[in-house]
Amino acid sequence: METTVLDLEIGTARFSATLRRDLAPCSCERLLSMLPYRGTVIHARWSGEALWAPLGDAWPDGQCLAPENAMSAPRAGEILLYAGEASEPELLIPYGAARFAGKAGALEGNPVLTIADLLPTLAELGRTALWKGAVDLKLDRRVSTHRSGRVPIAGAPPGRSRRRL
Image 1 (cartoon, helix red, strand yellow):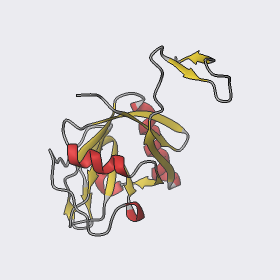
Image 2 (cartoon, helix red, strand yellow; image 1 turned 90 degrees about the horizontal axis):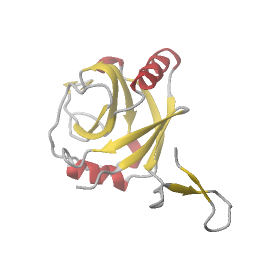
Image 3 (tube, rainbow, N blue to C red; image 1 turned 120 degrees about the horizontal axis):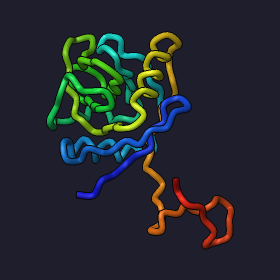
Image 4 (cartoon, rainbow, N blue to C red; image 1 turned 180 degrees about the horizontal axis):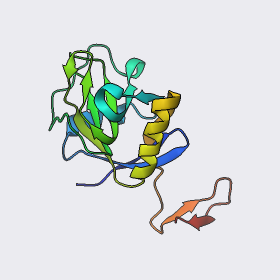
C-alpha cells in the first residue's frame, strides 16, 4: 500500500502527517475529501494533553463514521477522527498522555494520521494553546516532488529546481 503524507500546520509549526489507511480506510478517505482544510485548534483539557479541532462547517450534516480500529487512549502524535452521535465531528491531536472524551463522557476516535517527527514541538504548541488559546490549523496534501528529489522553484523557467533537503 502506498504511503500518503499530508502537510499539517499548527500555528507556525509544520509537521509531516502519515495517513493511516491501514487502520481506518473509510475515515481517511473522508478526511481527504475535506482537503484543503483550514480551522483552529484549542486545548482539549478534558482529554488530557491534546489539541481539539471541531470540524463543524466542513463536515456534512448528519454524516457519521463507523468505528475503524477506534481508540480512546492515543499516544502523542496519533491523530483521531470522531464523527459519531455522542459528539460533533472532530479531530483529537494528542501531544502527551490523553484519553479522548467529550461532554457525554469517553469517546473513541478512528486513527487517521500519525505525526512521528517533531513531537517536542507539538508538545510545546499544546502547552501554548492551553495558556494562550486558539491556534490556526491547516491540513493539506503534500506537494509532490519530482523523481529526481528536486522541487520546482516558483516562477523559475522549466527545468530549474533545487534539491529537497
